[in-house]
Amino acid sequence: MIMETDHLLPNPLGAGGPSGPSGVFQLLRDGTPKTRTELADRTGMARSTINDRLAALTELGLVGSATDGASTGGRPPRRVALLPESRLVLAVDLGASHLRLAVCDLLNRQLAAAEEPVDIAAGPEQLLGRVLERADELLTRIGRERRAIMAVGIGLPGPVHFGTGRPSRPPIMPGWDGFDVPGWFRQHLSALVLVDNDVNIMALGEHSQLSRSAEHFLFVKVATGIGAGIISGGRLQRGAQGIAGDIGHVRVSSGDGIFCRCGNEGCLEAVASGTRIAAILREAGHPEISTGGDVVRLVDAGDLEAMGAVRQAGRDLGEVLAASISFLNPEVIAVGGRMAAAGEHLLAGVREVVFQRAMPLATQQLDIRQAVEHHGAGTRGASILALHHALSPAGVDALAAAAASSPAPAAD
Image (cartoon, rainbow, N blue to C red; front, side, top):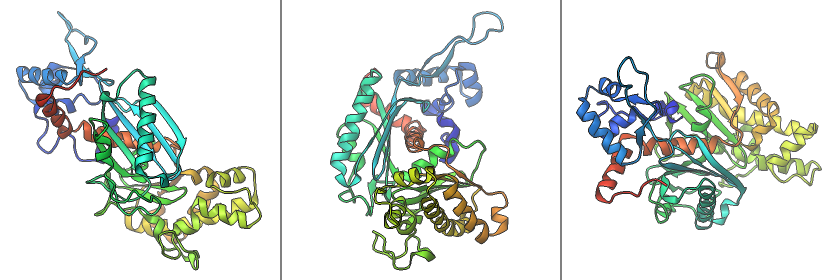
């Protein structure tokens, strides 16, 4: 449910508390039915004002009548609640070599999902067109149409200027630099579009699945590339230009003479990514190894060279994380991405260096773990991002303004 992670982003009620239809709506976002009396008590508004606010929200199709509440005598009180499937969100996780997408309801419940291999170098027009094709297939599967989508959340495998939704000089995404991703989607959908770095949305998704609360959290993706998503003080940190957490291009001591695709020497990504480990194993006599997935399969088969190469990659990653811990002091570090499937072989290398180099005070309660969400963190996080913005007071007000100027079609 989206409410579980609202603390990651600005207070949805705003500094002044609830007001207007959008403010009342925030009290119904968790899906729990409430009576008009309860809403009046929570907001301090008169019953007549509450009725007006609910009428506006009902007109938008966002809320409706729920099962009658328990009666203390006389007629049972009528309750209202969020209508979770009145609108939908499209969540997209687009990686260097994969496309995952899901259609979710307003409580972030996944209704349909799909996954397929892609090549990010194919360019934005081709890949975003494919996203829309697969989205139409999912909508058909659940008997809905594009007009039901109120927001799109999408993660891309490179730096993104969050304010514009445009990729910014992404090293592995030829043809994507400065491309107007939200503008492209708005040519095909009447929906809010949020675009972020893929590791940021994975951090949101993984954080929502933690078994205990953690206001200071670091998610690390190790796959074709290496990056981190930072949650500090309960909020996702993007940095000034959207590249906070770009640890893949930090120099490591074992990287002398190894050049990265960014043009620099000794980057973590150049020595510890799944692509690099596969190359090391090919040179060691495993010509069949070409991807990080191949490396994981070799580790699972008990190959000592593969296990050693993965553990060394963990040590290189641990070198960068030890420095990051001194800056960020996280409570939990979750390692995800394709190479995380190597499990303890990778984590053992990370822990070996982190606990050797980081300050004891910073590590005495530090939890370094494998990510819970092996594949779904990206789409989960993308839907969280989209829902938070679409259902915020500003988002609901924008929906109401659009309906007032041109009444929106009813939900399917």
